[in-house]
Length: 139
Figure (spheres, one colour):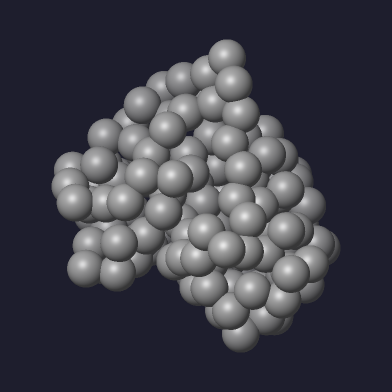
């Protein structure tokens, strides 16, 4: 893992996967570039995008994410931390260690993980990912 603080990160089809993209709020924006690149290159690398937002109204790219999630290798999960949409059957609340482990790839799959969002989200998510994937390959 690496952060874009003062820089940037990219993914190319030749980088392979699996890919774990964790976005908090507007932190999903740079991750969408990776998801779009994945789709544009018809990559078969498994990709999981987890977007944590406060409310359904704060969900960015809802239609595009629904379209991307139709690809065989792509999974999109929304995490609502304050209010969920009507009919939502999943939990509401911040990502914690157990929940993120359920959403992430098993460590033996050595996913490449990208985390972007508010500082608190990035620090917490990165720590959880690093602890559960100690031997993870760095992008």
